[in-house]
Image 1 (tube, chains in turn blue, green):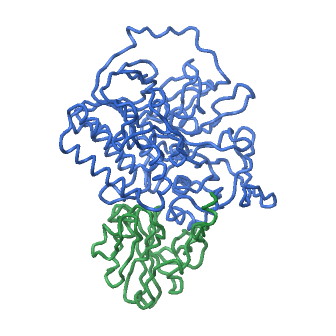
Image 2 (cartoon, rainbow over the protein chains, first blue to last red):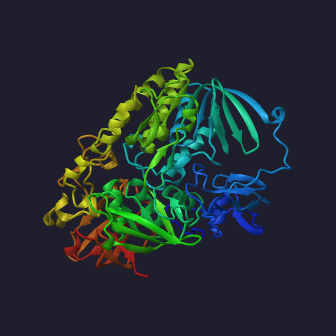
Image 3 (cartoon, rainbow over the protein chains, first blue to last red):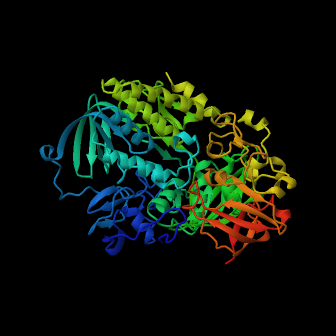
Length: 472
Length: 168
């Protein structure tokens, strides 16, 4: 189901290509991922689990969670949510742990291994990474930015709402517009090389391993590395939480706002934080019904103004409610919720059933810290920041002096603060390699002040407490 | 959690909508003189485009996390704040006509046409009255990329109607 008419976005028709799924012809838009194209055709079951043969579908839609693995052109375990559909591709549902192909030739180091030097390597092309790359490059550094998604922009590309914050720094602009202008600047910048569909697979002493387009390994020797890998959506426990149709709210947002594909017809949103509230509103804009928002806490966790936007469309917000189960066979048909008492016990007589085909989970995000862990940066479990985060100083340097962190990977926050952290990391990286000048020094102190102001309010008290624990 | 339990949670943070008593609103007398902005932003969040964009400095904040305060003697009813508020939390109310009040609503959905009859919805999304669309501003025409719809409603709904629904 394509979104034909959207009040904010336009989805041009563009060129189409065809590929096969289980031998059946599927038409996709050029520039669309395999998972998006399949979803548009109503294919939501992408694989079967190995042990119990349970159906599995999409979850995060940005390459983080491995819920969308399929066999593509005979290669198993392809993340179809970040792999572009291409003419003539052969896509197959996979079950369990499929065999590796026996007839393909192993990669030979001499023709598949490139080496490359760069001043600053930025891993992740979201708000933090884009800003880090631009700032370092403006300071005179040669920069390489990589992202494993098919395009740069991170989650900005699906943020159709206007950003909060200060008018001096993009407040009032929509995330999509901010993303477009940053990506445009990156692509025009003579000091920046960008690589999409490229995963950073490991950080070693002086080398970072990249895997590009599922066909080429690249060894990069950067002077400084900025890890801006973002975050991954959290899952909660309830029966059938692995059923196709139980999606991350961000995954739902990617389907509808990036690819213009309706995620379903009726949605139950779980979580009344900013993500849950904003995605609910955006679902309404995409013409999808939302039955209710369920929130386990006794109050709305996101900004009130986001809640008011959906309440005035008669969307109930059920605080102090939890999801008991999801029911269906090959996909979600119903969700059962109930009120809980102040000790968290379910009040059985308050059960409500919603006939929905999507249960969207907006129940938190966890920093994507694995590369930092691999690199040996010291991590700390800091719940106010969403999970494991690296220790860092106020210049975003981790405990390894050649590695910086910025954005959600350093603690879950907003895109606005991610951009400021990226600017600090990028500017300091340029200075440390002897490239930046006074402008970079000033940018660092300005960005630090802005961050301090953004975080000063009562809303960010837990964040401030968490940051205190990990800033060294 | 235990500390949070002892805190009194305001009703609006449980229900998701404000009541008249929670708001700084102009008096009926002030509204009779012309359009004025009603700001429905009860939380200290880091955001300032309303005060930064107000052409007459009628909206002030202590700092970026402050509450926006509006001076009704200065407000000229221009709707710039309505069009620039990222939270879509500002409405323009004008009761200068004898035939009812006009309410300008930030509205990011398919737009109605001038003259169209629509349902006027309250803050909970319930239909409270019929409303007539008197003005439509597309996002291209808006100073802040947010489209707005102005509707006329009976005076008693001036503080209630905050959304519209097109009649199918």
